[in-house]
Length: 299
Image (spheres, rainbow, N blue to C red):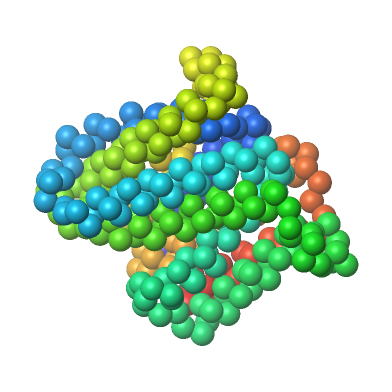
C-alpha cells in the first residue's frame, strides 16, 4: 500500500466513525438522515456536469439496479436510526458493519455473483459470525437464543440487510458507470453518489411526511442544527476517499482489510467519548470480528 493510499483510507475511517458518532449523540430520526441525504446530494451534484455520462444509454437493467440500491439505502437508514436510538454505539457500530459481510457472502454465493470464496475467506467469515454472536452478550455464560430475540437486534439486521443490498447493487453499478463515462472516474463517482442521494431523499421524504413524529423532528432540525449536514459531508466524502485510494494499491483487498480499523475505533469512541460500558465479552467479539474480516479480506 502506498503512503497516499494509507492516508486516504485512514481519513475515510475517521470520517466514517465520526459521522456515526455524531448520529448516535444526536439520537437520530429518519428526518435527521433525510437532511443528511439532501446535503450529500447538493455536495456532489455539480459532478454531474463534469462526468460526461450519457444516462439514457445505460439501459433499463441499470436503472432497475439503481432503484434497488436506493431502496436498500432507505432500509439501511431506517434500521440505523432505530438502532442508534436503542443501543450503544460500541455494540451497534461493529454489528451493523460486520453482519453485511455474512449476508453479502451468502447472497453472492446463492446467486453466483462474482468469484466463489476460497477456504481462507470462508474461515474468516465464520470467525466474523462467531464474533457477532458474542457482541449482544453481557457475559459468556449468557449464551442462549433468548438473548438474541430482541427488537434492537432486529433493527441491526434491518440496517445490515440494507447495507448488503446497496453493497451488491453498487458493486454492479459502479463498473458500468466508470466504463461509460467520458470524464474522470472521480467525477463519475460523485455523479453516481448524487443520483443515489436524490433517490434516498425522495424515499425518506415519503417516510418522514407520513409520520407526525418525523415531521416534528424535521421542523426541529431544519435550519436549526448543523449535525445532519456534517454527517452528510462526512459520509459521502468517506466513500469518495475509498474510491480514490483503490487505484493506489496493488490489491483492493488491502483497502478492505485496513478499513476494518473503523470497528475498534467505533467501540473506543463509545467507551471514551460517550462513556458507554463495554463488557469483556463484547471486546472479545470485536476482536474476533476484526480478525475474521482481515482474514477474509486478505484471502
